[in-house]
Length: 359
Image 1 (cartoon, rainbow, N blue to C red):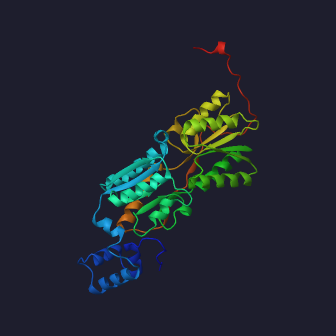
Image 2 (image 1 turned 180 degrees about the vertical axis):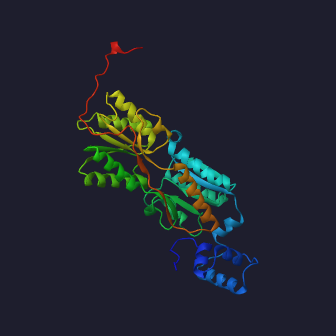
Image 3 (image 1 turned 60 degrees about the vertical axis):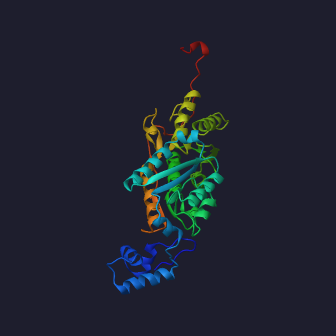
């Protein structure tokens, strides 16, 4: 028998578990509907009181005055967001699930983390949404603390359990995936590997950073960390800087697809062959990876399904049905294509002279 965890909203599934009855029975008993005996009704109500469940809680109030709208706030540069395949597919997955339930999605793009929290607070005050998905979660994220309050909006954290607190979360095992990518490159003989990483404040970036550094140390590989904002241009600059250095890496792992695609252009510009001179691995494996030349080796997972999964869990939290907790969605798997190969002695092709360039 599980006890209620501090700071977590009591749901009817908690009452059902403690009372030894089904969720439907709890719903019938608490709402005064026929179909349960007086004895069972009394037992359910007694357990609800012991767990401090109350019809006047924020979750109950929202259930009685539904907006049929869920919310998601993104603190991202709109230009970068428009080029990011991950969020386009993730949002599509959320919409697929919500459309089945006749639920709308309210999306707000803001310019700072402070703006994210302020938006959530406005939504709650105006009863704009029934619940929210928290994405791009940081360590000690103030949104997680705020949504953990008993009177806050129901929420699902789309991030690693280590930063979700007592809230329900849906996550991917990025650490295991990163270890697989490094192991693949090490087996191919690469001894200097660069990680072209995203924004350090995000929890998933730090998890990937830590896994990368641990895995390179385990395999006796020299590691290099390069920081970007996920945009193709910042990925291009980081790649050019690394490959032009005195000790260039023979392989690079990117935090998204668009930076890896941009890296192919940088390699060609510098006269390097992929994978003969430099190997490249992308993350998320959008359709871009299959239609480049060479095709990109990538850490692949069903991002559309990830969005749908997160939306389903939020529906359960709002309704007070289904289990709460931390739900592993997937471990991105390494799909090997043409952009990775054995480490070799780097050679560069001579650049054409200006007079040789066909106009």
